[in-house]
Image (cartoon, rainbow, N blue to C red):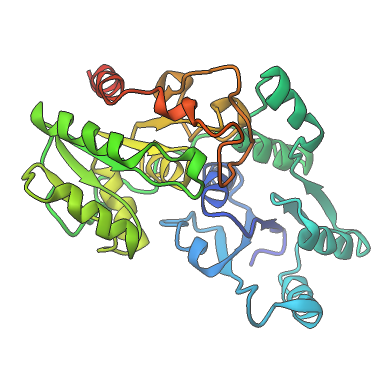
Length: 335
């Protein structure tokens, strides 16, 4: 390491979509400041998102469920982070665990800045419909307060020579990731299956993305008897899925990690919103509200991050979006 090189510790442990949203900001920062070494700490699985990192970025996968769990684990974690010798700490998580880390470094005269989650403003989102800044821009703001202003120059995790994918993709190719963590962010499966059938009847090739187990089982039923519908669920690694998303002409996703993963691969995303809206601050990188499909009804949004049920019991925010309207939106976006 050059003696003049500074080091920045960047912290974001979860969740998958939130960690994905840090990458455009971190890679842009690294590109602008090649003499700044950036140590990113996150969970081991999420660390795999950081494909083709700039040479001045090191990603550390920290298993918080084992070695670094509990009080003793936290002490071990602090010792590990101390040995990275940061000059700056960018807390992009802002939770109890990172508050402890922040305090530890502040006591050692390390400059620390924390992302503003605007928790006090959540009533404005839910009651008044006032949009909040996108989280990627909030991450950039943290770097600026540390003395490293940056413009978002990131384009994709891949270039044309780095795309390796395990299956041949036929075009026009529409990727669909129909699941989300929460019920009230998930478009009704029967209606999404109808959307798939409408698309394949028009000559589109549909590729389904999902997890192992129940999701893969359900998507296997969707592809049965439909030669233009192929389920990729549960068959590939995270890195391979990202590369496959990069081959799509368009990805369709809920407000979930999949929209952020596809955006990292440089693919245009049609995002479908139920209990949340783009105004909550989670729109994918380089995506606009023109790429988002939501009804903007009176009770929407009812939550900032999602919840297990619809508070009113009707889920009109998603049931009111017809499969044909999704098809129409897809066709308008891919021209």
